[in-house]
Amino acid sequence: MKTLAIAFIALLSLAAVARGEGYLVAVSNERSGDVSLIDGVTREVVGTIRVGKRPRGIAASRDGKLLYVALSGSPIAGPPGKDGKEPENLPPPDRKADGIGVIDVAARKLLKVMASGDDPEQFVLSRDERTMYIANEDAAKVSVLNVADGKMIKQISVGDEPEGVSLTPDGKHVYVTCETRGEVFAIDTATNEPLTHVVVRGRPRTVAFLPDGSRAYVPAETLGTVSIVDTSAHKIVDSIELPKGARPMGTLVSRDGSRLFVSAGRATYVYAVDTKTSEVVGAAKVGTRAWGMALAPDEKFLFVANGPSNDVSVVDVATMKEMARVACGESPWGVAVVRRTEH
Image (cartoon, rainbow, N blue to C red; front, side, top):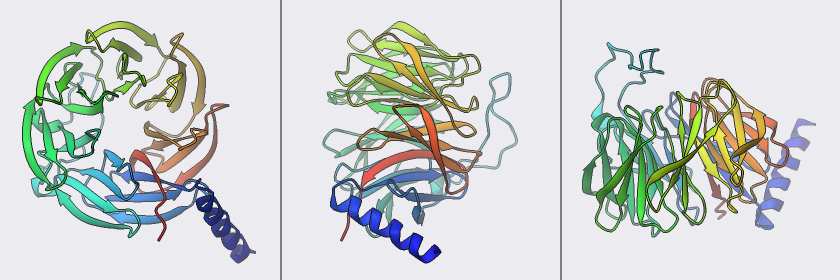
């Protein structure tokens, strides 16, 4: 029976690929130093790729052939204490381990590791995918990388502990969140210079934009809120209050802009927010310290990385109910969805 079940799953996956529905969910596992590849249709782990130390931020190329993952030799510090300070007496960082890993999706292997600056955490590709902007958490900088040759173009000074990095839909600006002072820096991609910055407070982790680029959503982990920023003026215009106990981390906006999804960290929930009313309209109970998220290509399912749970939740977007859990590596952190490339 087990053999028949495996054969059925394989046929289901192949049929889905033939219909153009097949996709992979790539998950960076911070403590086990690898990337899990999950079949989005069968929800089975179909590959595990060793990449290096502390993989966190992860993204796919538009054609689905490559995955990029941020690797860091900085020690894992754990969450800050009640005073907001990081634990002390940590081992020294291994700077040789810092870099951006490049994975061949079809071959299931790490091709190379590009320069990144110190302690890369998250990054974003430019619209033409020729340039990468990388948050260097320990260095309070953003590195600008030429993707074609892997050479550093520039390093831009920002606030302490830069983390989230997102590109505006028009490609003209990169927003970078800096945890320590709750700042968000806007970088002009034409000049690679800081344009301005906004103070949102509360340890902002990520940024998500409406499709028209008019609004940015920035979570404040320690305040349990999400700031709404007018991107034309680069100013806060409103704030979304999340349910009590929320520790907002990841943010993601649906393709039509009607829904904002917020992972609530140690609150073990993912919330759906109506972007017109700024009201929470759904809540899915997921795993421990929910963080990275990605939507399926048809946006029917949301995949959520649960760090201490060592698994990924599959959430039905229509009902905001968890449908399944997929065990992966140790401390899953980031999630990226990529169309399957079959050969």
